[in-house]
Length: 373
Image (cartoon, rainbow, N blue to C red):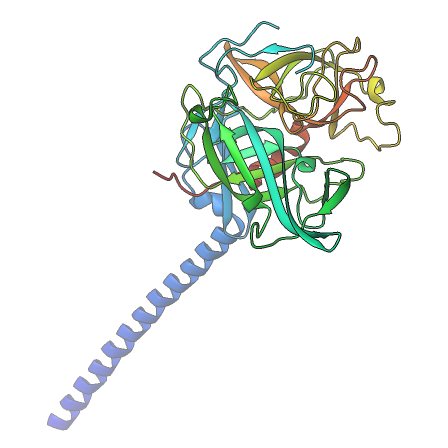
């Protein structure tokens, strides 16, 4: 009897142990399967696990494990921790560059000045000479760490620039190791003569559009990611992105520090603005006729009388359109100054990059991870 009872006890113990192992195995299997499902979902539907800002329109599943929150059309930010108002200004702009007028002080707080500088040692007549040069373009701040400009403004290794009577090829050297090191951005700038009023920001990354064609200036758009996190203020704001196409005959405003007459080659000291008209595409067919056009990605804009225009130094700046959303007026950057045949020539409008065609590319490449104090 004792042996039988002892044997039964052993069996019960084994049975309990077996049940315990089975329960642990089932729980482990459930946890493993659940984890695998969550990992798969997080990889293909990362937006399911991202909390967006209250002013975000929604979230886009970009790639494996990468989702991006998108701010509302009249706000700018990373869509997760910040969506600030965009396209606003604290100073009323002038009611009416070449044919333009001086802008009101700090009336275009999203317009920036981009300066690229370069120097290297070259051999001339068997002598080593240090040459240096710089040039400027405009740009537009679209969020706390991102600027839009024209790709043709940015010279990189292999490109050339004119220096006196000869062309100089850009080669990275001990002075400049990459394109980012050649760039500086002035934000909150109105008068270039007042160096103390500007804030200089370094560029962390340059992103040229992957299909930029430097021969025909197609897809003439680039993004500058900034090292600093810029907080909005009366002098520093963000332009909104356009989510609607620009209508024909719409009046846009271009601002910049470019030349005020052809051949000046020194730019304006004061920020200037000019009203220009968006024309039907056929008005620009004869502008640089050997250059290919793509009206899905470009805008024809200018003044047919040849009295108002952009000029050298204005490239990369924004074509701003005033819009109304629920009785709130704001400015969006609908175009980027790309090229023209001459400055202020009759019947020769200018060609602008159509920003609305690049919204997805801009959003994907203008994201930033955190707010920096």
